[in-house]
Image 1 (spheres, rainbow over the protein chains, first blue to last red):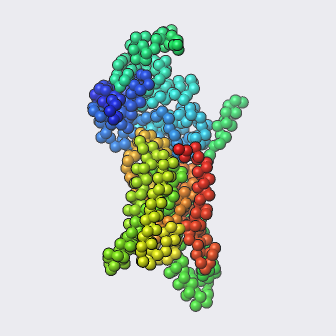
Image 2: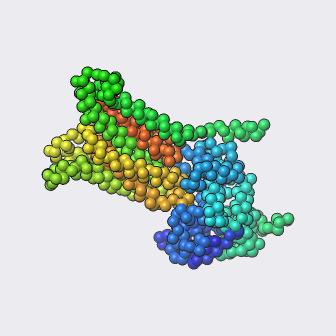
Length: 260
Length: 360
């Protein structure tokens, strides 16, 4: 569905990404993890087509991101960015509608209703975005992305969903809600790639974890393969005790101490 | 109980947008009413009853009817048409500018785009007078809007380069950069007026404060195509400007070819401002007041905001021009003074409200 082929990205003299090889198929849920400055967000920007790699290329459904028209690319992949500042007083509904592009309003209403209900904001549709809390705004933007994905899917089949720290401003319940919605998308064939800081959420959510360190992919596999004491110590420089959630058997992480 | 309370919290601060068709219909009615009012007032007042006589409804003294007819068709109506067109163009330019720069404080006159256009127009007048006395001088009405468009284009692009770094626009640098550009262009106009003996340039107040005096059908005809182009471009960029409010990256993610959107918007801003300035000089604040008032009522969506701005801009300018003609009759107040008296306090109010955004 989406593939980075030998991607290197430089900004000035700094090499932010080095020889990235990553291929994600429809139905996969991939968590990009790594310490601050590892290149996670940069990789997401490269995958979305927002940045073009210095070397190598990114293929979306077999075609380089640079050769798509912005409009066609938007029909195949959607991106939820980390923090979005809105200039003008749009309502929640107007923002969510933007996900539909220039489709006829009559058909859009249902998609918008579904998305608003999914993110638990149905009662907020007429509120001005800027009067909402950060987490509520994030959910409204996710609803917009869901609308964009729904239309892309209807026209071209399942696409790609890229999430940059989607849970950062959300409370626990809505963190889980958002990741569940993303995974439901994956179950219907969407390729989902999310930058996640919370490793415990990453192991709950992802079928595959890609660990970055200083611009390179250092580990790529299931949670059991990647979330281990050895990897965490090497990449994150922390001593942890990785346990297993009893019923599901997925790893969870508890640092030994805050140090000092 | 708690569900009820939740619902109350959610609906508090809710906003309902009016129906688009009603908004447009209302603004068209307003435009018609203001136009009718403008026709009747002026140095030579033409009350409604005599107005009807000119259009063949009811009878009137033939001599007065003939005089009214002359006043109407050769002076009043071209002037009103010019006012409406200039207002529509300036409002369109202001709305597009605010959308492009993601900044509710943008106005073509405030940030030097109008001055840049005026300078280019003044240079053209002087150059055509000096170096091509015959043919070009008589053409200058037709080429003035084009020259002003070029001046506006250069200043808008310059401003964009100054204010935008790493795809973010700094509101403070935008306003201050615009101030510097305006000062420079105004100095250029002042110098040209000082050096020139051309009677078209002699009146500096025309360029600095704006005027719709000396309106003719040929001026209306010269800028009408620009309004047609502006209306067409407005339809083309409105969705893009909506998404641009989310940020450049988000607009791109949502399928907007951002670079093309910016280029087209800059052309619209320059063309609309240039055409308006070439016939009326620098008239400020229309571009900031109109879209802001409309946003309060109809919301910020550009698909409705742009056409509504064009209609309200036309009405507002006709009303301001009527005031300019009536308040000190038979003399005329430069219209820029009237728009500034209304617009400048309004701008200050917006500035104070946005103080946190403007902080350096």
